[in-house]
Image (cartoon, rainbow over all chains, first blue to last red):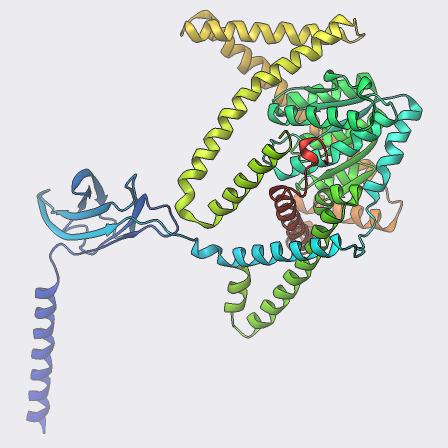
Length: 381
Length: 207
């Protein structure tokens, strides 16, 4: 029995030794893992390179990766063997380019060995962002709803909109300035024209300017961005013409105060202190200057109607101003004031989509409680 | 034509704007559009300077009571423009150093001073907001005091730090996310209205 056990032990040890020797023979001397693939969600002008050294830093302290684009040598990447994943984006500058990567190992003596691995990939452009499908579906749903509701509004269906105090107060605010014989200041934010908040503010500027023109109240629109300036000048001019008071229009009422953030705040604050407006509109995108403008307006005794979609500035406006349009109310203002059916339809669609988002969130929450994340990923990917 | 062309351009470039957000293959075109926006913006700067000049010239011509500030604007603008231009063509010259010093040691500190004034504006706004006249203002006052205490908490007052962390993480984040969803939908709706030509107030008129 003892002999059998001894023989079994010898066989076991021999087999283990043989396996170890075989593994040692199979282990590549300059081991590494190279992965070259087309960059996902791009316009086809790059490929991704992932490289993982497998040899120990003592054996191979450094690797070199030669890169070729369409057979032409581009450059060599030097990778110090830190036993960590190395990631690099290879620019190709054109679509359909073939990128070839050749890995060379530098042994302890610094001798270049190899190539130990060669990989190829072709850069291609993708037709859609795979991670934006959820957003795309939501957008299409939203656009579809807007079109349906606009159709309904055109047919004369009554659309209810809740009262927005800040917009209801515009008439009174302009009337107050007229009675006091003091000017109205309109500040359309301090952002550029491609900011939607600026466009929303310019949409409100027209009815305000028209009202100001009708009441023959002095009007001042200090602007920070030159492109916004040209658009605002046109809007105010047309509003005065629409009110039948083109004679009151003065090119200087819409002017560039300054292009710097705090220079602008200083210029407008100075103008407020000197001219003492009775009403100040602060509608659009604001940053740190929001409170400076709102507080100065308060100091000179003006009624302030503010509105922004900058969530970090909203608390300041709420604290300092008489009326504040919170976030989406700024975007609803144009439809609210004009009562045009086409514009009202979009407001209703907004509310319906908001309901759908809340439903999708609750549904995702319930599924996530059971450990199923796919519903959440589908809706909010 | 005055209305149709801008509306057509808004429609075409609006659709392209949507497409570049969905199709990665159009990313290169997006960069071209952004370049053009910068070019148009720099042209508009000339219009801005002309507007500023006209505004202050009118004040001086009409002998406005505050025309002194218009003189200050002109003098400083021309001074910086002249030494900036001379300094550009004469690198390492006195003018270039003067321009740099005027910028770094006059304009930048003035900018910083304006920013520093914010502390006083916050104090006066907080004083008015925190007057506990209604129960909502009282809630704001209590929450504000707790958060302020939490920011400087030590020793046994560390409980305020925990309450602050909870206030910021749960109710504040929930309210902010609600606002952000509404704002996001508002932005999309406004963009669609502009692209489809439904919203045209920004063009100066309805018809």
